[in-house]
Picture 1 (tube, rainbow, N blue to C red):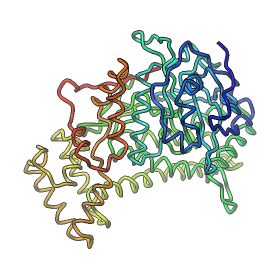
Picture 2 (spheres, rainbow, N blue to C red):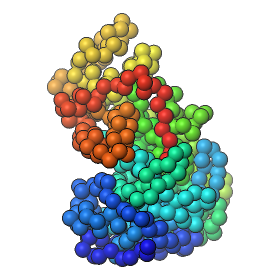
Picture 3 (cartoon, rainbow, N blue to C red):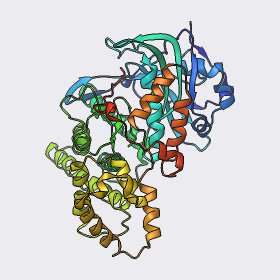
Picture 4 (spheres, one colour):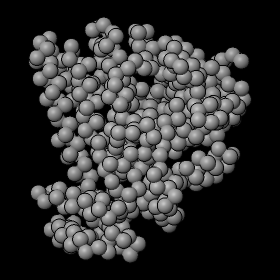
Length: 490
């Protein structure tokens, strides 16, 4: 089997700016063809946004392309090189099972990476087979599209195809390839790679490229590399706050999984929290709880400090001055995160203005929720609709006291009760991708039934709609789902 070039009728309009960087940053590699690709799911709305011909890509030609058997006209496949701190330990990494096909330019002039994940071995595969299993690829599709509905910056999934081949993990599984769409795949780990193994000029070229691609550096900026660091800190502070506000746990916040663009990337052992507990960990490999829900903000700051270290040679000629500039930028993270999170929590509680006691009011609620093992999403949903009858937490004496304080607080603002309700509806989702629902969808899909997944995706598309159908998906899992674990799928 050989890679062939796909017809231009599919609507591809590639530019390849990353491929014009020094080849130190990547290896030119073609996907490894597969035996019998078949389309599992295709994201029609995303394809239309990208300017692609959905009729062409939903047929066998699309399956061949998204499996890597055909290469789109104008693409220049490559495996990106990067490094990263994985669970605190630094190592050389790279795209071991993924290939960047190129950058699609949309009809609106936007630029998006098109990447195949699970497309075969690359020079960075080490001992891996370069392949992916169907279940983890569908998980990424589900969770990334759920994040879109929640309004959280994220990479997206364009298609999943099966390969007609198997992969061996703990057992034999059907193979699959995911097509991922991203603002870019530039990572903290990309800068770590350049700083550790490249020249000062390599680092400068990467930083200039990143500024041009993502940050539109203003002409008035005196120090563009400090500006780059400050902007990345701002985006990550906003992103992590959004994760916390909906109970999302990334599961593997290594530095190679932090995107410079500010998008959520790499949906491996991720999940959404049911019962509120800051110590919640779902990842089977996070045995020490490094990436627990409550640890995500400080881990983000730690990762950003590693990013700042890579930029030191660019920040100032004097090392001490560079360190001071970097430290000041990193120190901004905590305040930026706290502001984003506190504002988000106010909106979840229907609060339009700020009062000094708001933070203690919020933390008191979270403490009660933790003590009572309350469901995170459903508690805020119950508050939104004032429906305590279905939530045991809302019947406790301690909660009644808190509720009275909250009601008194809401009456000290000029907005009406209707305004408050509307604000809470817009900030408290009716539904999240509950772990047991995701597993149901994946189990059915592995058996050839996509209807369960399609229905779940439809429910998750607008989580703030608060429809009757969504109420059916709001129920917590039964006792058998306790101790839920996710796996990275590599």
